[in-house]
Length: 110
Image (spheres, rainbow, N blue to C red):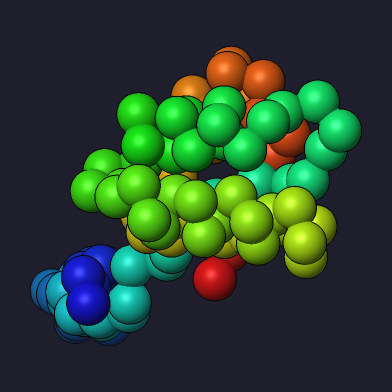
């Protein structure tokens, strides 16, 4: 899992002749990189073939069998997570699928 490294300053006072100074000490903190879910919603407009073609075009590594399974899940369950990962990529895939006319849920953090 990718980790985000955050650096914060930890102030501490240091006595200096004639005045007090603040020295910032770096503090290292690691947190998991936030993942976002790209969710396609069911609608009465898009065909299975169109959904499958869009998923295979825009979602990296999407294979036909997986795309068909996702299209069926979208139709039967009302939605499906088609990709999850870093926010920037999730935003791109969400935007591309929406531009092709798929009905998209807002990006979900998770």
